Image (cartoon, rainbow, N blue to C red; front, side, top):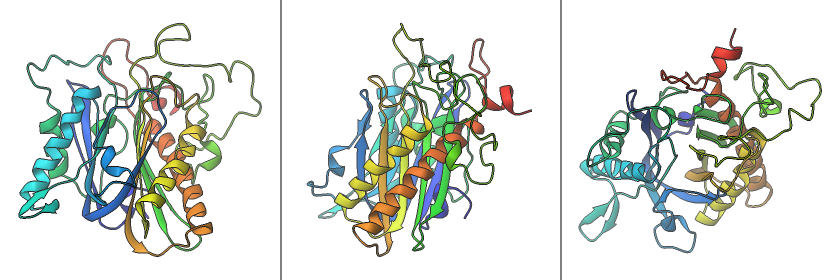
Length: 332
């Protein structure tokens, strides 16, 4: 286990980003179509093909998931991933035609200091194609791909991942773009809200403070308490090698959202667009009640850890007034 989303066999991840733009795209590709569902808890989501993932709708499986910066403009990234998959002959068969199924979601990073004067068309379609073309089982964390321009209320955000296994040997892994209205650390200190779930010092091993003061529990959000929060939305993909139906994948996504609540304070706000995709590659059978419950519990833990890792590995944007990275403030 590499503590990555690609610990699930048959899954590959690719990034494409632009430092001048301070934004990017991450593509999650399945070697074989996967069962998938979606849960949305934030009040301001930006999603593509979400209706396809409803358990009552016809299409059962997907070929990829696209995560992007750029707010609604970043939804173009899915077209780039589709184009690459189409070149490989992938897609849902409709007679002789094949349509790659690529749901996706976007985070708002348009005001982070990067140059967004891209002309008539935003670059996200091309970035999506590039991300799909380089997808592999090894990928970077931090300020890369869709996490390039991500921020939190107090520190630079980024892209994180983590993985684990249930007692029955079923794997589950998460990848997340941490671009939250709230904070992932307690007060002004180095402690991650996700600290109780940390494994092996994967995001610094600082634990929690000895005691919580009222100031630590005060709300810290982008823009301050009296202003409109900006530059929001955390995006997550949770994948398991279990055999799941679409309805069970939906339940997995719902339970996995608990991981965001454990790691981001506060979360699921009116201008967050917090989204969790859940997918299953269908290798190992699972008991549908207790087994699925345990899988959801572990998935929530893994998602919380991935959030911590995304911020821990982030690097600050090179612009005046940019938020510091966790490593800049606490790494030494």
